[in-house]
Length: 489
Image: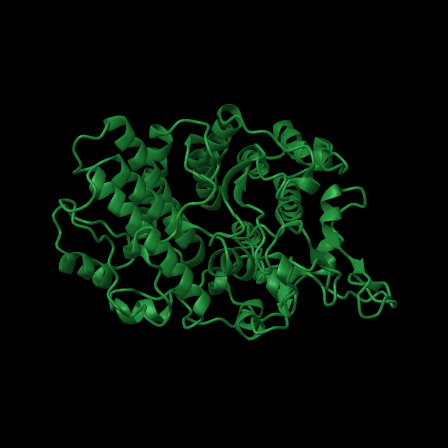
């Protein structure tokens, strides 16, 4: 299934900022009147995947780029109509009314609602094979747990919406308007239970755009890692490495192309297809002004730029460096123009990431490159990090890191290079930056390493400690008086 059909069930429409003060419905169907067969279950499950999808402008750009990289040491933005909205994110001047927060909060709770619908129907339907129902429950709980995990990355614990059996629509609406935030302990237990259920009831293999045992273990790995549960993270990562059948793709420079998207390194990805409502909109933001583009491509005024200091952390022989443009010849001048440093050696902070190599068959804004959320390289480095935090520098961590570096021609490291946990920790953080730039992992990595705020301060930004979490959206506070804002806002 190349794309999940978004909007197959209109009850799952993602709410806009303008209508978000309307009642939130966390499940909305009448089981006796709904399709009571496998096709009905499949339709509901497709709706859950579709509402969870992080592609396009509102999903991929806002989550992976604006909120996850622009407050970090990798990338920033200038120009276009987007700039006024993004400047507060870059400068740590956001507030509860910032629209990006409400949009993603609404999207993830829509996917939670859709997942709850699947679970409710599978508990009442008759005449459907029980094994198929259990798989559907496992996929729904994967989507639900993943959605809560992403909410936690942005905001910390949020309300957990449980729908009692036989609840009326009024009672369900009241849950959305009255449920307080869960505690950290409650939240972690809930997410872990959902993902563990998926692990226990799904098999390895299948599409990397649908839940399977490998993707459930992978998200569990990241969940444990970001919660600094090192032993659990190391164990979950090993399950992925041993049992998933995944392999590092030989050529990093084609890993993110349309031609390379069928690779066996992507563990969970969001599929993009030209002509659908699931597309990759990154490249129109990355082309420099007057870059020689194809006639079927678009070049936006909103420009996504990479800091020179980050670009220069790559060794010259590192093939990951090849996916940056550090100079080009504009069509208007015919003069070779640098993007890394000017003639006096001053950093321009204008290098462009072309990681999502432009799709030759793109249609204007829309390219077909699939967007990975987690791939094997992430899990390998996660295990290396967890083992270092548990045991200090060790040969297995070094060997795991060298798998990543050998693939791209970077100089291998040796155990003797690292005399302390702190030294290897710093190297792993830097290596994760080099491996996962433009993939939206930098903010969470910096937070886990207690570097997010300090790196902003080092860039001259008056960031404050409480900003490791974004504020709960004001629209949600207005809608639910029992919600408590994050400290500092």
